[in-house]
Length: 361
Image (tube, rainbow, N blue to C red; front, side):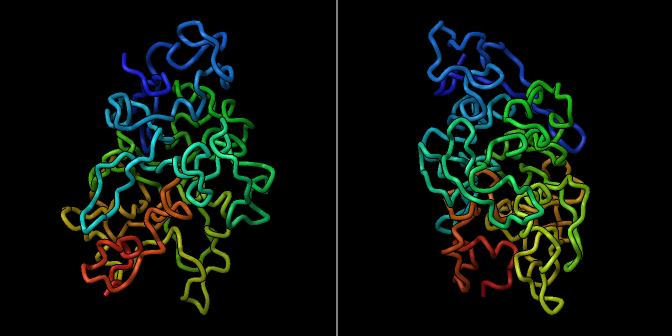
């Protein structure tokens, strides 16, 4: 049996279930767990066992190379590696006028650029401190007094739990909050939520967007609102999750001036006609979903190219990666080098112009 570079194997099977995806582990218990903090050969594990008697914990189990046969490139039979062992090839993005889509990074990006043992750049990813992944101490940008006030200096971010994104966020601790989810036996709704984000709806590409394409991508839950309205939804959208920590970037308060001009970039807004009408124009691709700047929909369905202006909703992750990217602010593209007036129609400067199609004259 082939193992990852950390000597770990986690066989994950994805099954679409309603609007979410269920990840259920199968295989030998010893692949992931240890009874007495030893490896399979009886040697004592360096640093001891992790929570829930796991060999590698959150970070160890999800560290590896997505190009390995037991990685995400193998589709539903692999492990989604969110921390790479070497700098991954980033994408999808345009390089030299060519769409680079068959890349190593998954839908959420990678912690490699922010990880203290790798890129160590605090601007490029979420500063998750679980299992020593990062050691930056910072406030959540856009945090309001009414948001998760615990997310401040001295209370670092974790993978899951009350201080994290995944798992039951009413339960403290990475392992307690995610307990049972990998086996499909969680006592809460975690195991049948999108990517174990409790209560969040969506459907997953079976390879976690390892080879993202117009008909191979996640489908994110979004809820459109009017331009100046206060954001109010059922708490099951991807942007509402982000807004729990970054409330100033998601609320409907103080967002517009003089009734029209935005004071910050909108989220949960349907792409209007006009300058956005060519959102789906992708060189060398046919279809109408743009994998460079993904949009959300009111009713997530299995990966499809059939997303139109009438139901395309801007979300937080239309511009950002959840885990990290090579670029500042976890952006999907290099914002500092986005420049209007490109002679090739914004292909090299693709980021903002994926939606703002008329601005790149």
